[in-house]
Image 1 (cartoon, rainbow, N blue to C red):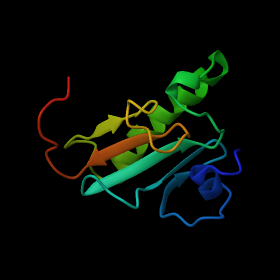
Image 2 (tube, rainbow, N blue to C red; image 1 turned 90 degrees about the horizontal axis):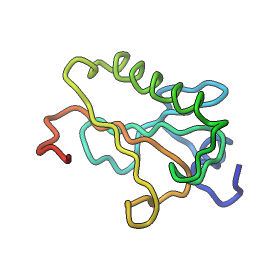
Image 3 (cartoon, rainbow, N blue to C red; image 1 turned 135 degrees about the vertical axis):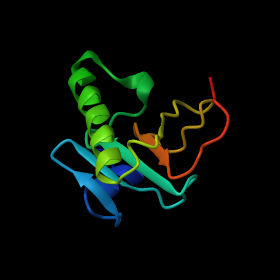
Length: 115
C-alpha cells in the first residue's frame, strides 16, 4: 500500500466509504462523485498503479475482480438491464487516482457506444 494513495487509505479504513463488497483482496464502494445513477468503484487491495503496471502474478486477481463486478451487478439488481465497466489508464486515459480501479456505471441508458 502507498501512504499517499487515497484508495489505499480507504482500504485501511482511514477514509470512510460506502462499501458494496469486500474480501481479503478486493473492495467495492460507491463513487463519491457519480457519473451515473449507479457508480461503483472496484479496486484490488494490492496497490497496482494502473492497468499498464499489472504483472503476470496479477492475472488471477484481475479475473476475480471481473467475477466480483458481475456479482455486484447481480446483487444490486442491474445485471439484466446492463452496465458499463471502465478502466482509465494513465494521464491521457483520464486516470485521476494512481491505483488500478474499475468503474461500474449503471442505472440508466448510457448513451452512444464508445467503440
